[in-house]
Image (cartoon, rainbow, N blue to C red; front, side, top):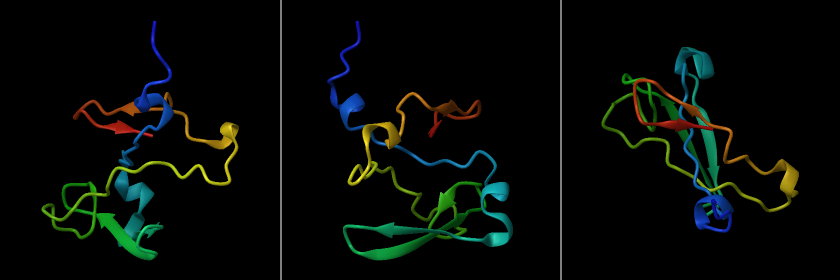
Amino acid sequence: MAKFTVPCFTNPQYELIALHPEHFLPYGCPLTVYDHGTKSYKNYVVATDRCLRESVDPASPLFPPFYPRAVGRGTFFQPNVYLVTLMPKSNAVVI
């Protein structure tokens, strides 16, 4: 029987991976993300390897894994750890 008190259930870490990045961010549009720690914004774009990165260069840093901010959210509105999609060409998990 699974223990739902382990950290992977109580404090899960997520990764955002666009299955079709050209639809998610068309025509070079950036995904702007606010970092609460540094209180700054960072842009991510679709790189030539079709991953979300800081620049179009496939060697640039990927969109980082993140923990959802539960501040001000009721339990019903928190991300569901079971809502995932497995990509057939990699070991990545999408939320």
